[in-house]
Image (tube, rainbow, N blue to C red; front, side):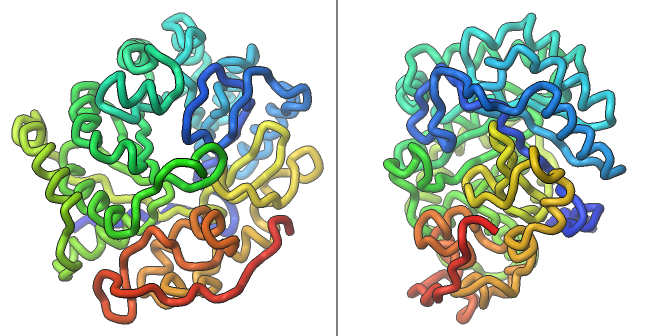
Length: 393
């Protein structure tokens, strides 16, 4: 029997599984939740082509299995050297993927050029089931229709398609409708982002912990229809393990019922059933690391706590030796309910959300409803303690 959780094939103390490189913050969209607080123009001190190639060379030198590299932004298509960077990484044995904004730059010709350069996958954002919800969230009219067209162009270019969806109070009721689009697009992966109140997203309504739990259980229900991963909700792994063991995990709430009802027809008509894709055991600083447009390294784009800069120290060295990243790889450093939780080594909670809400990145994740002392859903939160760590190390 396959394990319900996928472990990495290498030591996360030695190398990351995935590196997100924010190649620019320039973007034509004004998304309400933007982590990067993107701007119209490129920054003059962005990593250059040569510096980017040096970064990729460093990652390739880690050997096999090499990290997955995702070029994101802002909108990476505002860089004229994007295909050059993809080709360089590919030639060094790296698996290169892109996460662009849906703008006029995302053309079939541009996608074909990237595919020829060796890109493997492209992720597009779809935050609502219709133009009203998605375009409002993205801040520009017409993006919803353009996203559906772009999804077809990605597949036509021979690239794997991933759809990213942000879950917030204003978008959660549309998840069943987004699922329908995801199934129609025949995507390789549906990545569901749970809002962290940082950047522009600080002004949006995040779900409370019980509603997050409802969404996670619903995602388990539909994971036989499409491969699913969660971002900033590592307790999805705890939910998967609980369900796999047959453990009683508490009564579900009204949101779970609403999502099940709203998705009943699409679940019934779905053309395929699959063995659910086991979630991967990675977290901020533990198999995952972020490089911003200026070369600054952080545990995650949602946890902008600098540990150094690739212009000064190679990313491979920073990842292995930066004190903060080493601390984040130690589950015994966690406090509050996360520190007491029997799932802390495989989950660890969202360090980004803990930091955004409490200022303490080792505190309990306020979006988790699990109460480890009673083995059920939360009845009351445990104090998170006061183990604050400076933003830099």
